[in-house]
Amino acid sequence: LTLLSSIFRMAMKERVATLNPCEDLPRSVRKKIPARYRRNRYLRWDEENELFTNGLVGRREHLRPLVQLAIWTGMRRGELLRLEVKHVNLGKTQRTFTIKCERMVLKPNWLLIEKTKNGKPRCIPMSKPVRQLLQMLCSDATSEGFVFGNPMTGSHVKDIKHGFRAACVEAGIEV
Image (cartoon, rainbow, N blue to C red; front, side, top):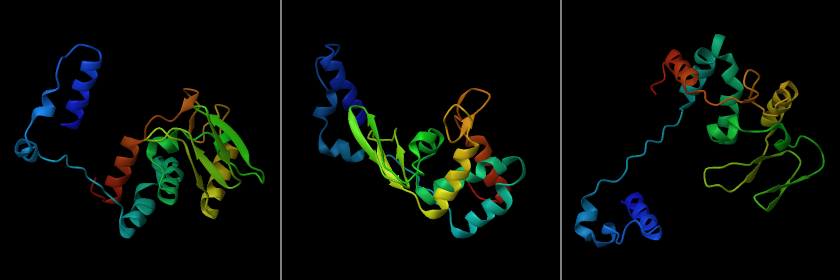
């Protein structure tokens, strides 16, 4: 309902529509509209162990660092895949970036997430294991500048859905 109402407001601004029928819906009708079901799925300890022991091995071994970083930092898949080497501060001095006219200070042992879900860049601290893993990944990074770069396209890895799903199935984790 919120989305539909937003579409009508936009149409009214563009002078394509003259009214927003969503605003006239009585509360009794609004209450009958089912809430959007969101599924939040978290790995249990035993599932995490199975994933790393049986799922992320062999031809899916390359996904292991990505999954480890996701678990250790709480970063979203897209944030991890778009992470650039220059946004990982492994040095001893702070760095400054200007993103969308906003000045961001990146402290030592912190990393910058330029594109987030809400559109606002943010910095997060690195724990010791995250720092060690990112040191290794950044030293292995190719010239395109992404931590998870794709040498065939010269860009970053776009998606890992199929590989991660197969790793979960192999580990016996319901997806």
